Length: 126
Image (cartoon, rainbow, N blue to C red; front, side, top):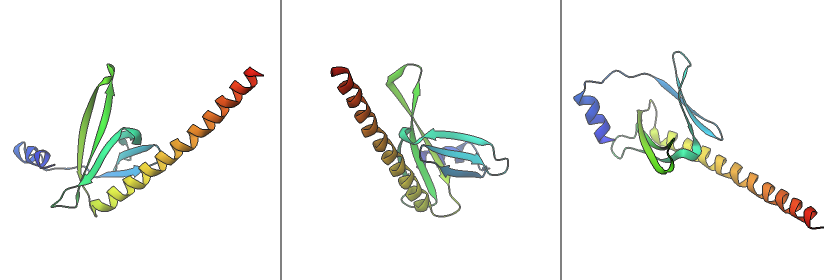
């Protein structure tokens, strides 16, 4: 995060856009607060890590795995850093809750598919 803040200072990037971060049970979505246009949408399964800055708790960052056309052999990662109006710890907690919901939803789907495939195999055998 320090490198990103230093790069902003070097290149005189001090103006910011206000974004609204929202989560669903599958995605993390960033929309422009003024125009309500979606700016970014990441699958929660691609969000690898999130944290607040140690010294400034309003700074929140997350790392996203981005797949390209070459496949999973060469994954690329991008880091996004934002300054929050409120506590970044609350944002990280919300991301944790959303990730847990996505994980639970994934787990709920899998046993059903396994049972279904077992039923199919059972019917094929008899």
